[in-house]
Length: 426
Image 1 (cartoon, one colour):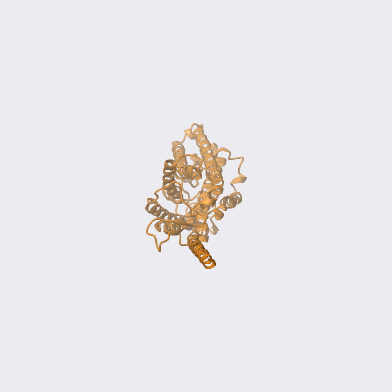
Image 2: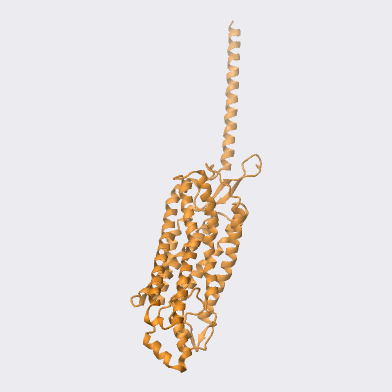
């Protein structure tokens, strides 16, 4: 009986031990599977999106637009900088080198930041052509994203400084003489570089590489995972990025755009007043010049709004929708497409400034012209958009010049330059 009882106990223990062995093996297998999956997901950014958006169009559209922007920006801005340097070092009147004007200082800074912006685009072109795959490393990802926005907002800030400079020079010429010195303008430009750097340096923290699951074939039984360079922030840090992105848009664009619109509206108002003044009514040439200046200012404001306003409006809505604060999936898809399409518009400003210089610059006076001894008072043909030069010649001096027939040509040249409200850049 004892032997039978022991035999029954052994038979009862055998399935329990078999079950424990089976459970142990299952636990080991699940652990190995978990480790395998965890090795595939080294980044917290690898998370499913609740709203699937087809962005296949951007792999053709964005590389094409950015390639054209890179070509035109590199070519045109390089020529502007070379001509500016040649004017400073190679163009002379007698033994004295030509002096830099305040407009030239602004132009050189604007062309420099536009050129730097264009140089950051080839990396983005390569990434989009590889369908969002980033092969340049995490540091280059952060640097390229930083340069993209840093130079974008530097360009906006320099255009804002130019509009303020023109407003003060045209509407309050006698009160702001010290602000128009070359030293003051250099200090303003240096401050712009510093302020924009402080404003955009958080991009170094948020922009980074992350792993993303893509479509296509499954390799080796695992998911198709590739490295992506995130434009704003990875998923688990996006909520922290949204407040910064909104502040960046507010201070980097909406406030400068308001300042530009107000300054140029006041300048146009001042020109309208001068059109009906007694001194200008005697010279139809002045009237034509100032009417042309009004059209130019309107063109500048519209081009600025066309380049930057759609991009910042759609990007602001994109940040809010992606965070889930409003709208639905359909709204997210629409805004996402509009945001991607308007990005090249903002990039176009990098070469539009230089293009306007070539289209509207005064080509009648070459760089090294020494024929006129008054040429050093001119803003040379380095300026896109000659708007509103301050009239520093009184009415009595104009009458005296008109009476002196032997200096008629000289008087015409001087009035032509000084009656223009300014020679500035876009």
